[in-house]
Image (tube, rainbow, N blue to C red; front, side, top):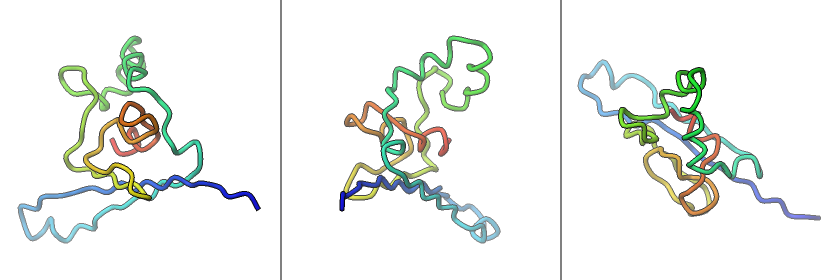
Length: 109
């Protein structure tokens, strides 16, 4: 029987609560699981191409900060299975040691 590897990424929102009312909201946790299509093989420089055309620039504007750099979200945390990198959501949790990303990034944004 051939062994298969599975990539499991967990994305969850962190919240700093300022009132008792806000503390009653549930924490949202999403499990993204799959094989090669979840590894994340999109290069960071691909994001620059989204800004080249007005339609895609507008559609994907949430992926960029005011300086045009890819956003890193304080309120969304990524935890990867099998001891892989974890931390604030940014386009760096795919294959290639921090230079690639997968569906976790746009999904988390």
